[in-house]
Length: 388
Ligand SMILES: Cc1ncc(COP(=O)(O)O)c(C=O)c1O
Image (tube, rainbow, N blue to C red; front, side):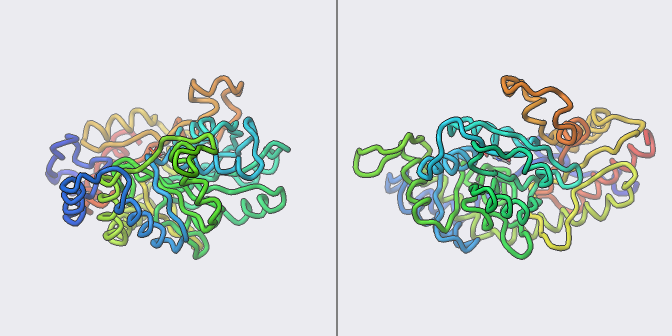
């Protein structure tokens, strides 16, 4: 194809023509960083408080509690449940296919993860399989809005109500996503976001939890600082998970351009969804339903069954042509060796395993231009011509 022959510049840092990730550090952020350094006020201070306020107000939430990572945001919001009668060893329902952090956070908080398979088409937890996983030890459901596509929250909230469970949304990858007119992250009791460099709002490393609940917010503030309640009185088993002023300054810079980043990523996502329609017999890609808005993390591609080529051949070809990609995560309980202790066997989470074995994702971030997407599609076309 014409576009694929066009010469694109190579990213100096990654050596890729279509690099996977980026990070926006604005001039405003640089000024705030300089100010914090000049004043030698670099641990948690006014910029962290300001970032929390600004991030929460993006989604009209009452509280934002900034922490060190998205994994901490997940773990601390789960640990809040000890204030609500949860016991160590209780169960938290999570999808089998997600970034491993979701599973790790459950264990770090002292709970046991109970995995539920996902749907290949949506990448998200299969809501029809949740009820069978609920036991008298279940305390919460933690749906993940993978790749920025909202999980099907209505049935999840209905189950939570029926069984008296908490819902914590892992919104790490879904800043700005919407489900039936509501922001993802505003449907459950708390929502945990990653602010790692790959995400729409970033603090480089970092995380934040949002909630409207005053008591939950207070517990989160205590948990991020070793369970502190008063000066040097420690009431909870806490974490050391504080954000610093430099990270918060980067975050404030990103909040100011949140809509711009979101719109650019959405433009890129919708462009690729349309371009991939012609490859419908080869691939399942992420799609946007009528009642949702994706807050794009990346563009996922899953090979359909019975093709003449494998995912590894395809990804290798893309890599050689300068298109960077990542695997579409793994089925945590059956494909991640550190979870073997749970005793599951390959085949128990067949949809998640299929996505992992046949899927990958490529960057559609704010520094990617349409000519790079055309180049990517051109490489796909060449591959299909040669191997399809
Ligand atoms: C779904 C999901 N949950 C949790 C996390 C953990 O975030 P972090 O890497 O900031 O710890 C990530 C990371 O991006 C993620 O994708």
